[in-house]
Length: 514
View 1 (cartoon, rainbow, N blue to C red):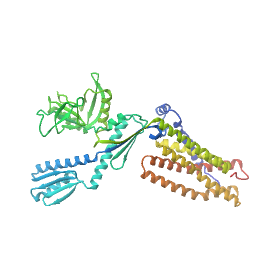
View 2: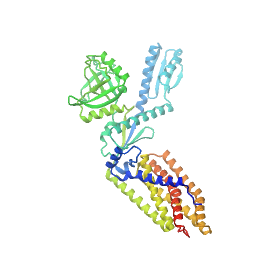
View 3: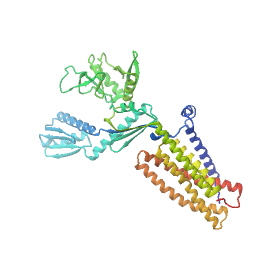
View 4: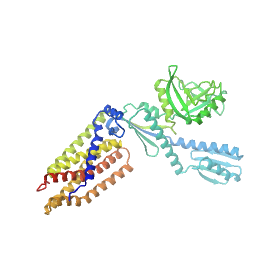
């Protein structure tokens, strides 16, 4: 019998009502949505679908990480560690060489090979060791290099995300692409110059004493930020770095923009000790190889807070504070591709998508109504609700809608009525075989169900695979298509069936208009 339990009816009605409620924010202004978010409870529907770069314009940046410099630094660190440890352990060596692939140590005695291998293991457990007589070589194999690359890209993405989000950019897309590249898409941003400047800086903050002698192996000359032709000799080894910095904010001192920063408990103690031991000595604050300021230490700074001055503009102070808060990049990032999509092109894409969706919707309705008459009307209503369900789910998930995503929606519109076509054709066949109205409808739904599940399941599997292996627009297409498959099953099997049951019980027809 065409019987639907009460709880299923309630579920269908509640789902439809909620779908309209969650779709509504997409049809009001951004100002109205902001007011709703401020005044309504957090569980109320106030979110809208986010438009991708191709629909609202913006900037597209492809960044490449300098992995070679990271590997070189790891090798240099290993070399320095081996030198220091061998000296402290009184191990003699004839020669230490470091190259692109690793570090090689030639010992004076083969008796020290075991001790040296232990030192290498302590320096970096990812090293692969080779021994030949009194020569021990250490290098990173393919697995070790992959581990370094993965960690570098992961950390870079985290820092880039903090920097981009700190500029107030809405819904940025930041993800890995390939082995050593990062894709950054900034929807709605027409001029990405400020973001590019932020991403071009590694933000390595260090504190150095100014060298009194001005020469020697442990001295390096660095340019002043205000005047690159003016340089100061600094002690090569920093007294401390910005790793212990926990917060930084732009502020004003005597009417001039400055940056105030706060250190962790460990960093505060270290900073206190450093400044206490170097009172009356010039002290340089260095960011990415440029001296920002070089004041004299008048007294120990032990409160865990300090300021950085340097004739900043308000924007420069704000950007410097943002860089320090976000943290340092593990390596430099080079912009290898840059595109800007204008808002007019984005609005054209939106209009084209609306036109395609509307035309597809009207053609499907016309076909269904002409082919199946009243049943086609029910299927058309379910199709409209299916569209609302898709938009509601995209809004709830805060998914980013792109032009390929719209293509996925248009595709699922045809697939949404496919289930109804199978059911209606099966009902026609049963009517021709002499069955009663109710028996024909029961059998139609029962016999068509296996075909409907099979066809939608195979398409859903394809969507999952596209999402798993695809990137960018491919993922957008896969998301909307997969959501559309789920909602079309609900609208075809649950909603259309409920409308038919209500119609049957209300009108008690002598024949089916199908």
